[in-house]
Image (tube, rainbow, N blue to C red; front, side, top):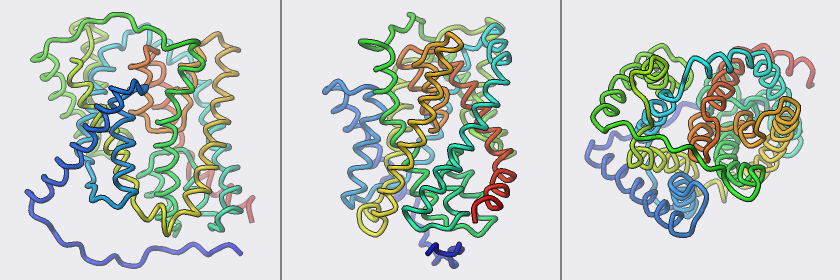
Length: 361
């Protein structure tokens, strides 16, 4: 028997903590992420500075440790990554993405269809109502899907759990899959000089202003797209060439990885364990299906399979872009696919849900 959709009752008032208490919590959580990054680097884990912090923060949270949300740190990471990727945009690359737009539209429709099919599976496995299941499996942003779902009376907690599992599992598994399709190892990235610190920091400041403006208008991935747009203007005009300093890119990875890891809480292993297990199965089915589509398209269009796997991966845009960049893949192509996919999903999510509700009784 499926449970009826229900809204969360009025939440209990939260105690406002002093700024120094909150700052200490953020610093301690980031310290856990740094330790995880160092351990992953010493043990030669792929993408150590992102996967290490993610796994360390997740393990600490699942064990009941007092992890603290570090949303501001993830914003910092997105700004740094956006500025660095934007410098790689050229007019030729923009034209390439434009020519691939029809393909991106088709792939976005396929991802919504895959999500709807897996919503039915999640309903059968967990007993969730159709509204909650649909928004839990639609491969959009976590916050965006929860905002959309709240309008239709869905349960927000299962959506948060399933969407979190989707993003984090794919961030962990995608590098391994990419390395597999890259042959014996990761393709060597072309040597690109770093932009001088002062110039890059100035670019980051301008990008942060652009990110704030886009966030004000509630545009998707604002804190990454704003810096990317600003840096792309300078890069495409040949005014600034290169990439971000290595130390800043490592700090960005630690911030993003730790932020993802803090989404895991001890209740995932207690009260929410059945839902988490069902979510894992659905995530594997979603990621596997889209990876198969990506590989088929890569061979049909003579594109690198590893790049296409990340371009179609239903995870966070920032995480997939930085993964592609660090593995020496075409991060700009991945950006184009991921950005247009997210925009189309946000636009088509409501009509897709109404159709799903009519078809699935």
